[in-house]
Length: 463
Image (cartoon, rainbow, N blue to C red):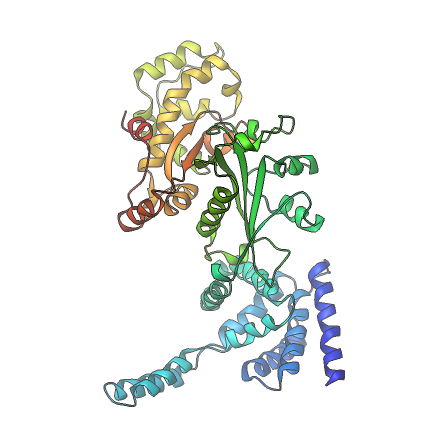
């Protein structure tokens, strides 16, 4: 047994090395396919004991990690196509179940039907869970699977099974909420820089500013992935509803006295693991963070976001009629009055889309003021009326409304970065989390799609 354990441990060390290093990828040749099928069949049948299963898992992981994209897609296709349920066994078990309905034998027949439907795919994949890096390996494997699935429909069944398994493993009850600070391990801080998905962390000084005494960063972790944040939120403790992200991220701004803070601004929420797509825990994160902040800072009375509108511009450019409704004759006249002489005066929606094609308009203070009313009305109508599949068009809006927030305020030229102009003409929005109304808002949105919004937002959308 000691010899076998030593072999397994050496295999685990090889797997760690493969996970940590970039190796020259290679394709899956005929010899490897035969070897792979043999290992997968042994895994599916549960051949041998626990040590054998772990050793096989190491060998399969080694094969997979050394493959190029084509090889990995082939690896997954073999699992998906050759290790599903046996149709004949399913049909027989279903017939037995139908025959047993209403009798004492029904429950045994039901159990046999359930076992027949269960594929060998997950029996194979769950064996990786016994390895120290096995859970992370499976999360990354699903990230690969999601890239291949559009080109190979046979992978969809495997993806559904793996998603369901990961959802069970990553149930919020198993997750740990941790605060990340400047004193956290350097390896973890480097991952924050790499995973930040909303506002790029440009330097170590930028990161240090986001972790200063007037800031907080919280993340969910899984016990089997202790150095991998699954999702994290960055928070600013201030005394007002923030309306400009550049001011919020200014490294040279003085540190705010948190004892005077009455508002917590969630200004960035980043999911980090592509392989956990479809596994939702962002709403639980925000609720837990609100509870922690209320406990630590009883003076806090407002919990809000400063959020991007990532799909506003793409929607607007595909919806010319929205411009005609948002910009009236007086808006067009004001814009023409302040337009530089070298630019043609706009008279219709397409002209405005062209005018706003780059960010030069925002540098002209008078022109920017002339555009403010119409762009704010365009954004309000986008938030309140634009839909996709019966739900709000904007993904960030769907997320926050689904978590019980209300649309509180639109902020003009709140993100003057290149990305801000590209996404939303620089517009940002505050979503407010009122602890007294969160549950009611969640219920109204989930039941009938009702959008919680402040009176000014509703009024602007109607104008």
